[in-house]
Image (cartoon, rainbow, N blue to C red):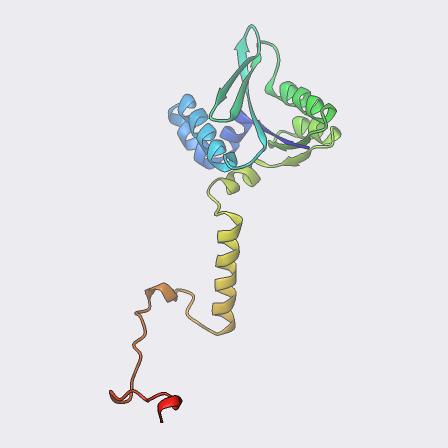
Length: 178
């Protein structure tokens, strides 16, 4: 059973500080930045990512950019309606649904289909987060440092190689030859 990740594109751009700054200069650049972040986030997963934007064409436009399905709604149809329809299709196909938006109507429509709904902040916090194993190692290091009262800025990789002290230059003979 696969998973469909549904992303309300303009809702993410309008509600995230990072994308809002880019969007103030150029909306196309904000869309490209969102696509790049989604590609980086989901490139090593088997999930199908569907990024939906409001469009104004005569028909729905779908393109693929580096494993991301980019969908522009047709004239007269909102991205919210497209996301609700895609959620229903995914549920009918037996796929899990995960949706990211702060829009109450689309969140409700997806949750009715049995999908899990998440906020814009939950998605954007994942974009530059470390992988699970790196985060787990960092938590472990911090716990050890706290347990033993070490400086939180202590890094064992910065330590010089230990020198082995020897008492004299005599090597002890093995038992066999004594």
